[in-house]
Length: 357
Image (tube, rainbow, N blue to C red; front, top):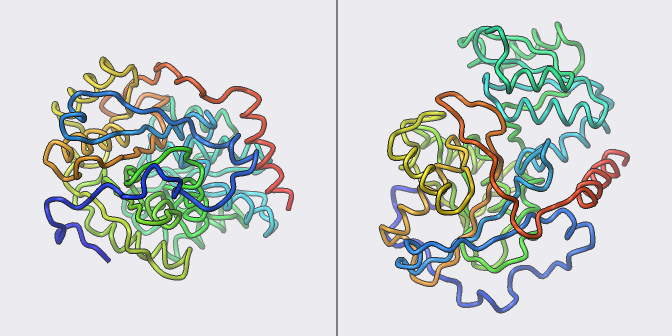
């Protein structure tokens, strides 16, 4: 496994096969094309000077209720819950958790009762994120922070099941082997040539999946949004082992662009997000995608990517509700080719068909 602290200054080179049809050997079905995220090339003089091309993979636009990696992480977990006869989904998250919102929406859509275990104390009125989850039918409960840190232990899980009954437990952030399988489907859906597929990293499931789904010489780069996130290397390795039987060696995690830690921001990050919105009309989520794009610009300026490298940045989701410290607006234009209601119907029909198995 490649460790972040052992990488030379220039770690990525453009693939000699890029542009010559080596993206994937798998034929894409009509349903694949319906569910594929829109792709747009970003025009920016700062990247041009570095000799780097940047593509935005708008996975956030495929399903507004289950944006980006949330839909992918939940896909096979919902199938497993249905196959195993569970009627209740129980999961965990912070007060501004996109994951809680997504599980609540998925439960409503597919007929599951949902329980969200929130870190910390209850605060009323509910913030917009938790209010949305409740509106989708989710029941909220709260754990003090010490107990929450032990939420994965048998003792805490047994207590929760005693209160809420027999339920299918989805981990915080949704990252488990089934989530990794769902995320592994993304690379084959991208209808563009690229050398490095990039994503923000919180719990590691998305990076583990997309790295496992890459073909040829392509590599994956994750940008940690947490401070002190060196443990994520082991997390991603273990998730890949659980999902695929063994880890891949085609990924790395950047640990230097967390901007103070999870949900933390700095004037530098705020300035980048505001400037990006002004230049490109896309309001980035400062918790995840803002840090991802800021990292890629900084790494390109440092010469990390060889001239000619084609980067693909996965826009995994958007801050649809107020976030701590002030979330970015998401009133950004939809690029040409973005998904309309007929494609959304195809996405929902595909997931319903999987759940019916």
